[in-house]
Structures are given as structure tokens and as C-alpha cells.
Length: 289
Image (cartoon, rainbow, N blue to C red; front, side, top):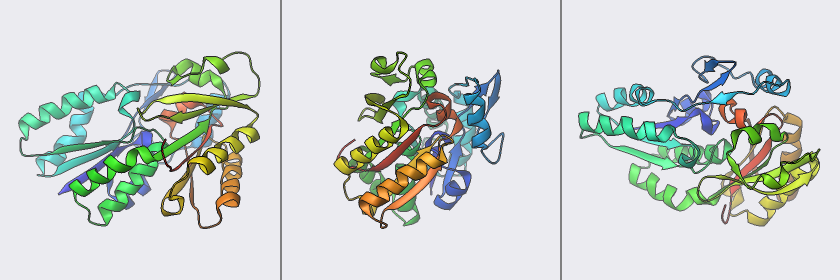
């Protein structure tokens, strides 16, 4: 039997994980020295409360989980005689995968008959979520591991994600976005436009003054790059900015019609620790990233 895993950095909720057959790996964040594991230390994410803390000056941090954490997730599955497929956020964005590799190597020695597969979504939040959900659909439809991996090889680079950051403080501190120097000055009201590239890294590709201009820029990217868009989800994410997310969704429906399969979700707190409140983005099936 094949067991699916994903992680909380992909924005999948426990309810969605149960529906699609995933087990969740919790990626922690820390506030004032207190480490929190999403959906382990709390059942429901209080997104407004979390992002309000950030608006009031709190600066969270994140950290990689250790090999023992991964062992605790994976070993029971191998011990039951099952194989694992882990669909995860971008390997290029975290040192946590070195710990994962160490744990898996130890487990392979102990369970030589077991198989461990991964799909690197080369994304985070909704860039990963779109792929996680598509693979979950394939799994529920009875596709085997070879079919799933073949799909991922062709399709991972066809899911684009574009978003804007509302507050540069968080990305300035995280250092996880390349090309930000041009918008890091005292430019009040400027929102950097960021996307996930083919290497799984966040890159700043432009800037807009004002939230509405930034939203319209995201719509323009969807118009330019969309491919077979009606056969796939279009996922809009926000960091406690539901009105902005609805504005983006409404503009997309205006452009593409009501057949668009739009979903709106909230950015998870671990990723939100880096992007900050009022970030808004969109993920869609594209000609390229």
C-alpha cells in the first residue's frame, strides 16, 4: 500500500488531508521563544489572530524539523509494510530536507524492502497546494505510483504562482526572495510582485504602487500564461486579507467566466511568518511558471 504525506507549508488543512488521503507533517514557527506546530498544538488556525499579531509588530521565526521528527512520521508506515509518497514544499527553500534525507537513509537500512518517493512541488503555500490536490485526486482515482510520478514529471512546472507582499518588513528579514533590492527602500505603498521560478525559489519580478494595481497585475499574469485553465483549480490565497482575495477572485471570474474552478484559502502561519499579513496570490495551470 502507498501512503501519502504532505506538510503544513502547502496550505492543506487537516480536513482536506483526510478527504484526499494525506498524512500531515507539521512545520513549526516561533513567537517570543514559543515554538508552535500547526495542527498539532492547535486544531483550527486562528488566522486573524495570528496575522494581527504581526501587524502589531510581532516578528515570528521558523526552523527546520530534525531527523527524529521525520523518523516519528515515517517509521510507523514502513513498519506496517507500506511505502511512502511525500509531496512537499520546495526543497530549495529549507534546510529541513537534509534532515529528512538523513532520516530516510536510516530507515532504508532498517526496512530495505520499503520504498520512499517524493514529489518536490518547487513551491510553497498555494503553489504547492494545487499540486498536492491534483496528486490527491489521482490517488483517489486509483492511479499507481508510476502514473503519479509520471504526471508530476510533466506537470509540476506547469503550475504557476504569483503574489504580492504588502509589508516588506517580513521578506526583508527572511531573505528568501531574490531580486528584492529594487523595492527595499522607503517606497511607501509599493508592493513587490513575486513568483516561484522553475528552481523552486521566490523571485521578485516587478512592483506596483497600491493593492488594486498589484491585484490587476496578478490577473494580467493569469491572462498571459493560463493554459487549460478550466480543467484545473485556480487557487487564491491571502494572509488575513479576505476582501482583497475576493477582489482578485471576482476579477478572474470576470475575465474567464463562472466555469473557473476558484478556491480561496488562507496562507499557513509558517509561510506567513515570512510573507507577513495582507499578502495575496494566485496559483493556476500555466504554459510555464
